[in-house]
Amino acid sequence: MNLSKKSILHLGRLFGITSLLTFSSYSFSSYSFSGELHAIVDDFSNVETNSLGIPRQFIDDQMVGGKTQTAIEISAGKLHIKGEIVPPRGQPGWASSVLLLNDKGLPQDVSHFEGVRLLIKLDKGSISVSANSAEVTNYDYHAAMVSVQSDGKFHEVKIPFTSMKRAWSEQTQLNTTTISGLSIVSFGMQPTLFDFEIDEVGFY
Image (tube, rainbow, N blue to C red; front, top):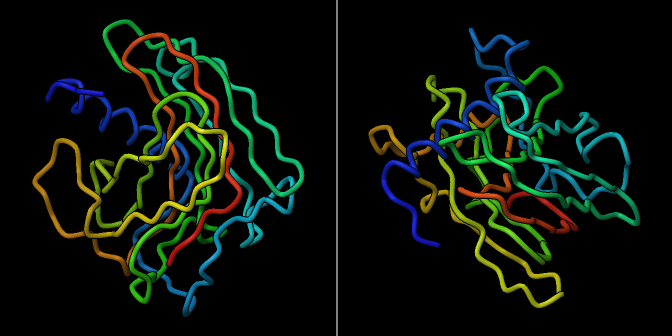
């Protein structure tokens, strides 16, 4: 999919909104670390919480005027998300899943890892993943597209931290000692169906 610079700018801003709304009730005035974080953030073995015992967050563009419809199911250790992107007028549409690394939204040190790892099956749509750093104050987090074949099979995808880029801000190096969560986002510039399953999310 080819995106214009303007489209990428819109996408970055809207993906930032998802994290802004999720983290708005938390204070980042001081950083708090809890030692080395486990590699697996979520194996979806619990219906309500991720593998760190923290509730998942699911939000979409309806809060900014979109009409995206999302169906979410967690069963047999897998997250299944499907629906239809219906964007707000003149903007991309999106549906986001946010996995916090701390129950208070505080940043964690993941510098002993190389990047983000997913076990994912993609049937329809486009997916992006971001590593949300508390140092990024305008919500333009470092993100990357998830590239995987739509062949009905689960694939392991590894996204190096060094490959994650910001959408509209000056390109800065991701500070992996200040990561508060991961966001997995389905998006589209026009009405489109999306359907994917995730078996596991974490770091490698």
